[in-house]
Image 1 (cartoon, rainbow, N blue to C red):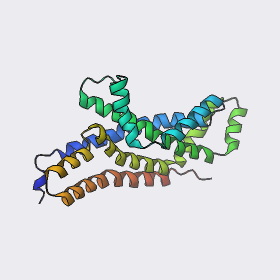
Image 2: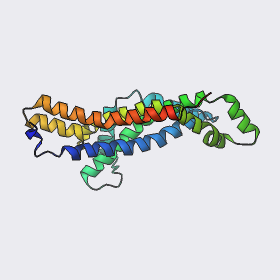
Image 3: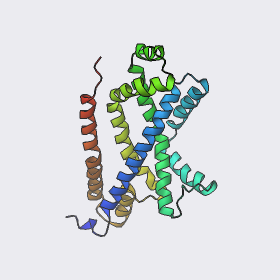
Image 4: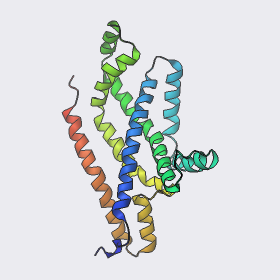
Length: 221
């Protein structure tokens, strides 16, 4: 029944998808948190940069960003991210593009969590001598993260599915292999079902776990 899978490294393709999702998730969480801090910063220049970045990047199609990392950064400006091999270079550039795009949505999720923290807590922190960065790091962000685990889970699931766009720059992940198999085999529906099931296996447990974690760590007011 699944003879058409022979000769194709399906597990390897999904492993590449997993690595793309994990590395991009870590990068976008770090960069998105910094952007959220900029958006609530008392410094007008930082607020302006954070606002402009989020409003511009999240309104550009991900495909455009991914292709720009390859054709723009790599081919025109010679940015290779320390990779000499073409496949490794494409993989790293795909992570860069996914991180840059997803961070805008992470930023907005975290900023919504920051807005749920009572203003009085920040005022109390300043009253005891904490500066802005200390207040944000010690008082506000811990509560904000607990409040937005659910929205961040949705962003992570969307990121996992968005890794399919990396096929546009020849990264050998699941969607790229599916396209190759459909071109070579006469089992379009079966191939689609296999890869759809694979993505469900990747995203469903993540959503269930983070949904449980969100309820467990919810801030009670």
